[in-house]
Each structure stands twice: as structure tokens, then as C-alpha cells.
Length: 513
Image (cartoon, rainbow, N blue to C red; front, top):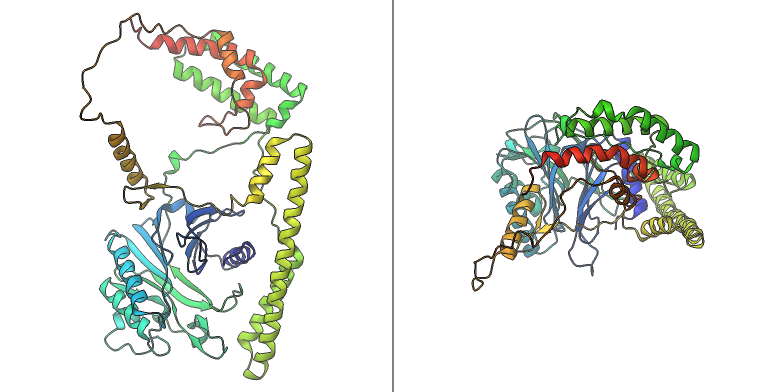
């Protein structure tokens, strides 16, 4: 299973090798969902729907730059996950998969490749397709009649899975990148057998033949996450494009509202607002311009007096001592890669022992981190600080780390990820639930005009002040970037500022009479 400590090591290797996208196999997580790491990467994953067995599982990690290009993603099964990205050339669809081993039953293999073919068929023909993952397929060196699929630099002897994988690539116009470029065998091999003497090429990256933009594909033995698979890196000539135009992106600023607890800061803020928001000067503005002046003034004063606060990143719970042991383990792996048979056995024993040490240290660090948070939660409970107690409890429960996807499903129970499909599903849902029963009469009766006496006068300063006091604190600001605490600190002054605006807005609407 991909534990938290292993995930931290994977992220470190991803940053070290400057990868924009990293595919994961055999995560053994149940369900499907997404999470954001402490360093800003996005992890999407797909696993078994039942939680009885923790096996299989696939995932994708997108860098901070690439996650902006993500359009949609789909959890197909515990062996297949897809993600659609926006590039400057055209849309790019990534298919990450984990195939059954060569000794699996024919029924398992046929079920996997049948679902994989269905997935590829549903991809738009205009998209660039990249199929990658642990295919457990040895394509071999024999490329007779297959140069347009696998090139001239294969490795080993082809097995049954290799035949099925090559047939799939031929049917869907894919080319296998690992056998296109001339490399040494040590840079082609992706998996090391338990005997540490057999090396095979079973992890692959295949791309659409028509839009092939591969620069290189090779394995890197230096990446170490205590796995018998090597890191396979593909370099592509593609430029990403943000999924949302920059003109539509909004920059959120979070102000240091804690400064409003000081009496001198509150007084300074209130005086600056009274001085800047002259009601006589704004009387000639329309409601939209009036509100823009109020909003920009409050934002400017908040930034100059309160200042902005940087988002605090959660502290990494793995200690420096543990990272030192992890580095020592990586050094031993480098020695194993360069060792001869006489010294390999001794180095493998050292690697096994230090790997146990890494796991032991990681468990110790996790317990110490949890005990420290539990102590903070106890202090928060004793001081009746319910907000901090809730945040610590939520963090200890692991909700931010393992967030199962609770998206919208169609009538058949399939997950809908794209915004358009979700909107269509909502339309279908309301159409079915709000439709009048066939037996119900469609005649309507009109209410007498004087039955509902709703006041249409503009709110008074007192009413606005009451509404401001009822605003909830510690809530995210809206599109205007103004937190509710700014209004609640001096409700009377803000009510006086907003009263002409609301009165002017009410005059715009026609009288219902």
C-alpha cells in the first residue's frame, strides 16, 4: 500500500527529476478521489470499490503547473484511470493502467484489455493519447513487421502479455516509446526480478502515432522508493495551456484579520473608511459604480492597514533523521546498480536492513506527530477553543489526506466528472423530480393581490446593522475578497456606508404595483 511516508518519498523523487506528471501503479487504495499535497501537487487515484481487499489501484500526480491544465479525469476501474489535459496543440488524454501479470488467467487478461479498449474508444479522435503504466508486457527484440509500432530497440523475449499489448497498439495507432530510442539495456529495463539477476522491460509509455512528440524514453535506476520497478521517464515536445483563460482567473488575497482585535487598528480602519468614502461624491454614481468604489476602497485599506497573510503550509512530519536514513538507502541502491555479482548479495542484505529501518523511523515520526497534535487538541478543549479543536481533529482523522470522491453519478451509477455531464445530470434529476404527477390537475389558482404584503422599501441603517451582525465569522470571502470580519468589526459605520447604495439599488427595480 502507498503509505504517507512512501508518498512523501515519491513526491521528493518527482521534484528531484523535475517531472510534470507521474503515474502510479499498485497504490492499493480503495475508492476513488483526489487530494492536494502540502507542496501543491494534485493526486488523483482509482481503486477497488469494496474495502475488503487492498490490492491493485492506479493514480496520477500532477505538478502545480500541470494541474492548471486539467480538464477532467475519470476513475475507470482499480486498474485504469484517465485524465484529459489542455495543451496549445490540442487536447491530451493520459491513460494510466496496471495490467494483470503474465501468469494471470485468460479471463482476467481479456477483461482488462476489453475494458482498456472500451476506454480508448471513448476518447475523442482529435485527442493525443498517451497510454502508460505497468503493462507486465515483454515486447522483445523481434520487430519483424512491427517497426512502425515498436521501433528497433526492444529488449528480451516477447511473452503473451507482450503480444496482447502490441496488438492493442496496432489497433489504436499507438507507438511504444521505450523501444524507439537506442539505449543500453540497463536504461531499457524497468523491473528487477527477486533473484536480482533478471531484468525485464515491462513498464511502457505508448503515444498516438500521428501526434508523436516523444524526445526520449528511458528508465532511471537512481530513483528509490523501495520498489522493484525503475522510474520510466518520457520527454515530450508539448506545451501545456491553462484550462481557464487568465482574464477569468481571480487572485484571492487573505488579510490579517487578527489585527482587528486591537482597538487602535479598528479605530484607524474606521477613520480611514469615513475619510475615503465621501457620500456626497458618490451620490451621482450608478449602483454598480457605487459598489465598485466601496469595494476597492475597503480592499485598499485592508491591504495597507491589515496586510496580507501567506498560506501556511503544513509542516512535514518526517524528521531530518529519517530523511538521512532514506538518503543512505538510496546510496546503497546506487551501489547495487553498479555492483558485480560478488558484492551484490552483501549490498542487497544491507538494503533490506536499512529499508526496515526507514519503515521503523517513519512509524516513529508518525506517532510523535500524532501525539503532538493530540496534545494541542487537549489544550484547545480545555480552553474552549472549538475551532482549533475541530481543525486538529479533522487533520488527525486524515480527511484532507484521503478524500474519497463524492461526485455526481448518472442513473446507472457511473461517476460523472466533466462539468457538462454533471449539468446535464442535474437537469435530468430536477426534470424527473419536479414534474407534476400525471393524475395531478394542472389548473392553478391566483392569490389575491393583497394576500402577501411584502415590504419593498429600502432597508434602514438599523436593519442593515442587524444583518451585518448576523454574518458568520471564519468563512471564506466571496468574489469581492472581503471577509465578513471587516464588516462585523464596525457594523454601524458600514451600515451607514451601504445604506445609500441599497436605497439606490432598490430604486432601479420597478414598483410591483
